[in-house]
Length: 201
Ligand code: GDP
Ligand code: MG
Image 1 (cartoon, rainbow, N blue to C red):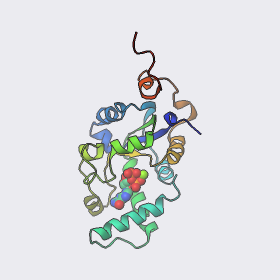
Image 2 (image 1 turned 120 degrees about the vertical axis):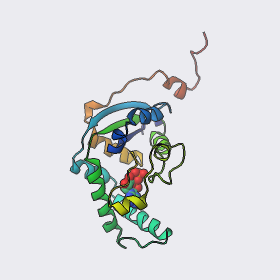
Image 3 (image 1 turned 180 degrees about the horizontal axis):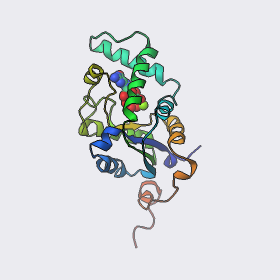
Image 4 (image 1 turned 60 degrees about the vertical axis):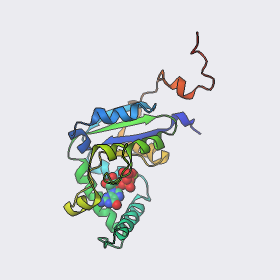
């Protein structure tokens, strides 16, 4: 088993984040948590990579379709289809159109509870309802309602892995074996050392 401080997660700053000049602001929010940046690159993904990326979780199609149908019902609206797979097909196509339109920043953040910490800082999927204080809640304004009317993906600035398992598979898609750097960050001693020896002279 990997030590909890080795946990890694993939973050993508999507094309809207880069175009809004939010790269620095977004990195700042993750960096100050104490997590360590293990790799970073700027790239324009292909549609094939985007598809592989969203399908690393074999359940994603079904889960996303079901979640979307449920959220239509909650709002008293009729979903575009009763078949979760059909609903997800539209979402996936919209995502492919969105993600390939410009450069994205791909990053790997590492540290204790990296997946959970990054999801918390990132906020919920829909910017209109994500919490104040989160990246998606503070820095942009899109909603499912408007993105559905316009027939496009919701512009929510970030992708962040949903689990450590997904993260491992996603990282392998975006980074080659030599592109992640193993190093010590001085501040990690304060986060992880059991006894905090060596502070006092
Ligand atoms: P994330 O992990 O918070 O990004 O969310 P998911 O993994 O559930 O979904 C991935 C992407 O699918 C999101 O960034 C959205 O673009 C899209 N998506 C997910 N759920 C919905 C939904 O209910 N409606 C619409 N229109 N798009 C959705
Ligand atoms: Mg996800």
